[in-house]
Length: 412
Image (cartoon, rainbow, N blue to C red; front, side):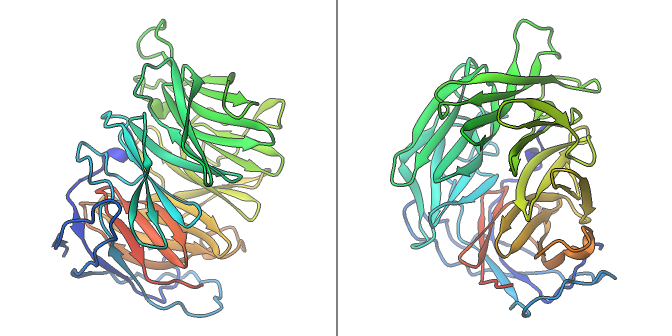
């Protein structure tokens, strides 16, 4: 079962106040929609709703000194951009990716097969939701976007065609979306990254000629021609008696540190690639965890993970600097992590919608004391906070019920 399945799709509009200063608490009434969400290509409606906030619980941890005390943040819902399809969990905003004054919206449900998926973004200049070129991804879900150089890549999680090939989609700035249905035997594609001139894809193959329960293999593919053709570089099997062909058993992610690319896997360790040769290493402090989201910050990868045998997101933020792996317990299930010049931002949210945005301006102790809780807020059980972005000094948070939240200005 995918961690995404804790979704309740009831849509509500809220204004969320994050009370500041809330020095790091690393330990530890909603209204119905007042109006319909804005249509695509129309500016978002202004929300008027009940205040929802919780007071942070202070801890003994000491916050890192900030240059100034941030003003209290408020969040408002600016609509449900994926209201074009109400099936299953199609509206859940699994990824937000800023690119050229736009925020692209990853969504869909590859378990319930709710595709195709529209290429949607929020225009940060106009505030409108836009269906980019009218383009549709021929996949049941696009859960991840990647920016490589000046190219935006949409990772096709589950091709709607047969399973002989998997898809990625590339868009150069001022260019058009280009579909590449070229990854051999890719039932699922989870991530794409590049080291030098080599493009690497991470996903899962399903081998029909093997006994049921033993057919799913994690796979790494490489391409030296921009994704036109691919070669199978590594395969690995499920471990510890996984009961079925659930692709989460071979789910992982890719990141680049210096001159090496790393691929994380649950219970299989990490693969590392130097541009020509693959080897194995330990880049996640606890091998039970599969990496779901990651960000590279000050020479280290920060990784949000789920525990594959409990179907739950971990409260530990995992780090790896190319030599050492460690983790920090932030005391609530973590959903997303992003790195910006202002610092590292982490989104946490439990199954009841109790959520927090956490902030680390720099590494000091490599422990909880590096983090400040910017605020705790409650989005209700209808919509767990799932994805995070930061642009133009504002936070954007995507919920599993389809709402997109936007904050007032934040300046650390």
